[in-house]
Image (cartoon, rainbow, N blue to C red; front, side):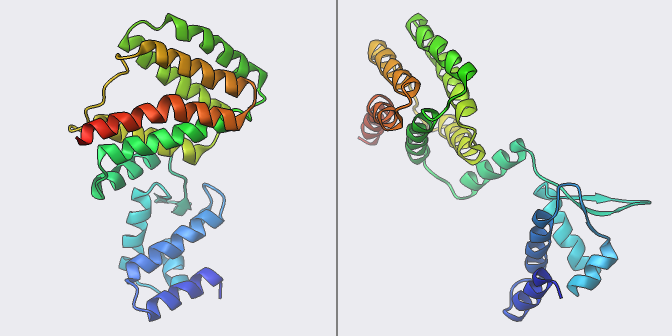
Length: 239
């Protein structure tokens, strides 16, 4: 008996909801196979897992919603494994934040911590083209003269760092928490209009540290010029 099928029997004996247990075993089977691989037919899977047709169909609907399963009908039909795209994963994480509400302060605090690590990780990049793009961005800092230009620069800067780091989970966490923090109706997120010169100096220091491949310094500068400002902002908002 395959290990994953044995796991279903163990979960059943322990009183786990049968649909939930079936879903978990099918999910493991999907991830163990290549994307697009045939997992089995409805009746073959029901026999191998020793569950009813209705139970299997309910589990399949859950996995379809997660983007992990494709049900094909007709000749050559059956249950095929799939992989959710980035947008689906981001929607799922965003839904989690809304079901288990985090405050905008918590989300903004998290994004600032993630940015520190993003800047540090980017210092390990050795791609000449991406480093050249970063040098160009260093010159663009000086051209920012309004909140709109600052926002456009920040977006482009973050996107470039994502390309330099290539850590999908890290990127998804940053994108979703930042979106959540800035779209909450109670989030008084304001631009740094009070001190544009300090913002420019901070970005220049972060970029210089990344170009010098000094991860510790990049984290320090990100913390000093980015996280420190956000923490002051959060402290003021709590008063």
